Image 1: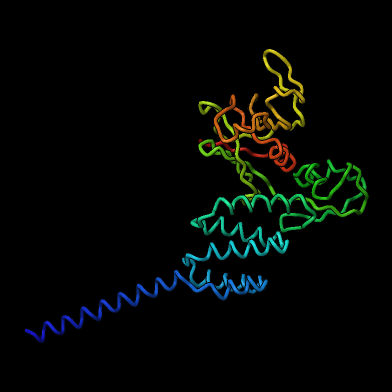
Image 2 (image 1 turned 90 degrees about the vertical axis):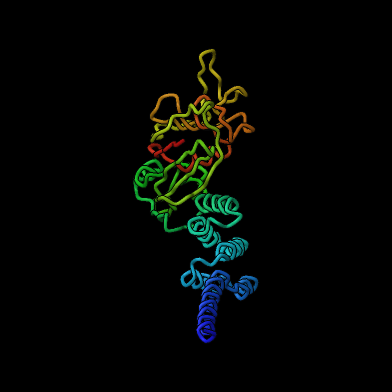
Length: 297
C-alpha cells in the first residue's frame, strides 16, 4: 500500500512540475526582455530596433510589451522627423495593439502626423508625382485623381492657381470616406480604409441627426446662414455655420463649423454635424464633392 502511494505521489509531483514548466514558458513568452531593444532606441539605431521588435512580434505576437515598445520607437522616429515611419508604427499600434494604455494618445499622434504628411511635399504610397501637361489646370488635375484643388495647392505650397507645364506636383490618390458615430460624438476620416484622423464633433439634440449613408453634394467657404427670420452673413457672430459648409444629398443637413466650440462633443445641433472651425477647414481641404458619409447611432 505504501509503495502504491509513493508511486502516485511521484506521478502527481511530475505532473505538477510539467504544469509549472509549461506555465512558466507561457509567461516567459508574454514577458520578453525588451531592454536590448530599448538600448538600440536610446542609441538612435531605430531601424535595428524595429527589426528586433518585428522579429519578436512574428514569433510571439501575444507579448504584452509590444505595444509599448512600438510606441517608444514611433516617438523616436518622430523626434528625428522621420514622419512616415513614425506614422506607420502608430497605424500598426492602432490596428494590432489596442490594449495599450495610452491608445487615445496614439490616435491623436497618428492623426497629426497623417495631416502633416498629407499637407507636405512628402510622397507616400498613397500619392502620385504628376507632371503637368499642356492644357492642364488644377481643376482638371483634381478631377482626374478625385481630389481637391485646395489639397493640391496645400501639399505643393502653391500660392495661386497658375501652374507651369512639366512642373511636378504631389497628388493624393487616396479615396476618402467619413464615418460619424453619434454615440461617441466622433467623426473618423478614412483614406483607403486606413484611419487618417479622428475628430470630436457635435450632433443633433435628442439624437435628431439622421443615420444612414450620404454623399457630400456641395462645399461652401464662409457660408451664409439662411434662417426663417433673417439672413446671417458669414462674418456674423450669430451665424452658426462657422467657416465651412459641406452639404449632404439630404437637404438641410451637412457638416459645418461652429461659433460655439465649447459645445463640441455634445448633442447640441438641429441635426447637422458641427466641428471646430480649424478642423472643419482641414477636412474641407481634403475631401472632394462626392465623398461618402456614413452616420451610425
